[in-house]
Amino acid sequence: MADHPQPVDVLTFGCRLNLVESEAIRQAAHAAGRSDLVVVNTCAVTSEAVRQGRQAIRRLKRERPEAEIVVTGCAAETEQARFSTMPEVARIIGNAAKTRLSTWRDLAAPGASAGQIMTEQAPPKALAETGAGHTRGFLQVQTGCDHRCTFCIIPFGRGRARSVPENEVIAATRTLVAGGHADIVLTGVDLTSWGTDLPGTPRLGTLLRAILSAVPDLKRLRLSSIDSIEADPDLLVALAEEERLMPHLHLSLQAGDDLILKRMKRRHSHADAVAFCAEARRLRPDVVFGADIIAGFPTETDAMFARSLDLVAACGITHLHVFPFSPRPGTPAARMPLVAGPVIRDRAARLRAKGHAMLAAHLDRQVGRCLEVLAENGGMGRTRDFTPVRLPTDTPAGTFLSVIASRHDGAALIGDPTSLVGTA
Image (cartoon, rainbow, N blue to C red):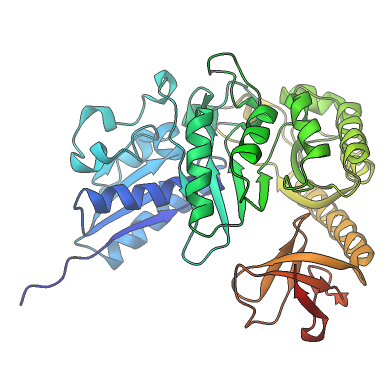
């Protein structure tokens, strides 16, 4: 009896958008009849991410010597030469082609090659990543970026900003809701630029209101990371008026000092960020903020770093993601005077400590409150503002519960079995 063919496996690095696309890659390769194939969907955001991708390729070849290894993702675009010299790599596929069925039917097709992303003009597809049994679905509505932050290589891995048309987004949302997904997150590389390349240049706020109007059965709609300076008036109106748009915004802030922000080529100031958060909180008092901050950007002094610490408090950041600066070859920031490694690590630790304190204070305020929680797998759930809640492990995923938070452990609220007071 012949051996059964090995499946198509996809190893994913990096952002949520890559996870969304990896699911589409897996489906396309399966539909094309591929087998004994390993696809490595790489990330280029840091040199460490590229190193991990190369290390994983070598390990995969040792574990599955007969498998064909195909490399795609952002690092396949920005580091094509490095991956092409690896003997373990059978083929490199460009970011624009990696989710197309035609690519996996003919891996040798010229249109599948990397290195063409900057000329790509076709709109992306409305791709979704859900995962088996997941209650939250992630929906790609945008890719690419037209900005050139000095620390970021991603535009050269993703190409120009391109948007999924509104009707396709709505159709995909309906499909996700019909499949049992009560919480949908819109994702993109530069999400708040959605629509700038579409006829009539609609804005993200218009899309949000269209989705909520057209899909009344959708319980929760969320946004992934946004650039607050790009937030349009309709987005803020939607935040104020649409109860099904969740009160959680994750902001791409990156720093709190105006000179550092200028050297990053960011388009907002410290005051802009504080003003946006104040206005959003005025319109939606229960809104909770997350943010990305880079520690130790080149030329950052102690006083400049203190402005980033100040920003966390001034904006009321509850969910803080800290990134120690790592020079990315090919970016302007890599040529700037670097901060010493131990200083970067110390500043990152201080930022994380500030973030932990802000989260603990937020959790303190939730104890004793009755909260609407959507149960997920593994005894976890999320409130409307994305606060994690520990639930009994046998709580069925997809269940809406009214939970009285009895206490917290510094990372999540805890709802004891006796605190489950019924379905919401």
